[in-house]
Length: 195
Image (tube, rainbow, N blue to C red; front, side, top):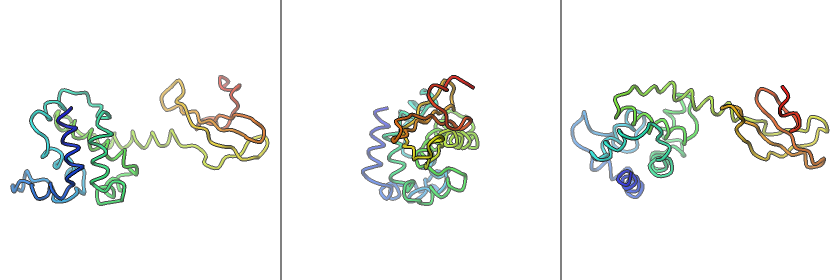
């Protein structure tokens, strides 16, 4: 993991221009010059920068690549234009993925699957992230169901079941707390166990 962290910091410090200058000349193994514009190019560029030790570490780790989110993933998001709508971001947008965190997650998971000889199953990864955003969606401008006054959003908790997000709101004028869930709408805390 230390080697991958070093690689991530190197990529962040040197940027993708340095990588382009050092790319191998063979057309079949060469990573794209500049930031990648497709998932395939992103995987090729990442693989090119991995040492045999890095590859061995990734292969023997679990598929959950979230441990690289703040290091390697941040480097990918910042240097490959995922926040600024660059070509790789547009590639993911066309597939229905809008958030840079999700894009880097798909890249890293796909890399792990490639290195472990497994299919990427990109459609499943996309569906996972799209479901997450549907599950966490909540009304932005909400009004109290009883008083009609504005509700202030106070955050969310995941309920007992996955994909069961409970969003909390506060009716400031009447000192009332309200919960909201996709499948239930608004309800009071005392009604939480009633279905």
